[in-house]
Length: 105
Image (cartoon, rainbow, N blue to C red; front, side, top):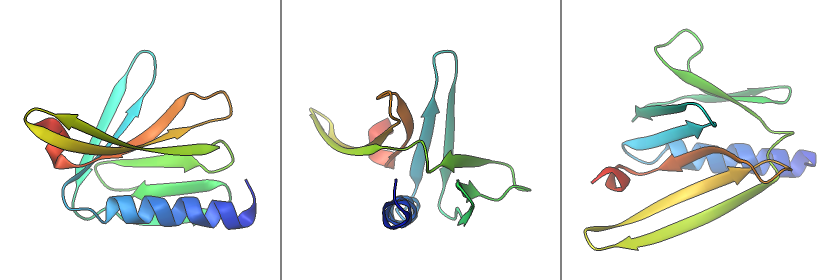
């Protein structure tokens, strides 16, 4: 990603964590991590964007060099409409996604 695109990724992540009661989910083949908060910080050093506080109860690191694509998803379900942003690396694997509280109802 170019420098401008890297800044856009940080701006997008900043917008996601600004949503009240946001749920961030990181999935791999063998584990799922969920981080919910109304007050996550965001900072960037080199290729790493850190969401949350390194010394706090939870945080995640996103390598902006690996994120190649973001997909915005709106899912209509009988009981709610849920929104998510899914990030993909160059192998089209999903990276961290941000979901709103309404995804859990």
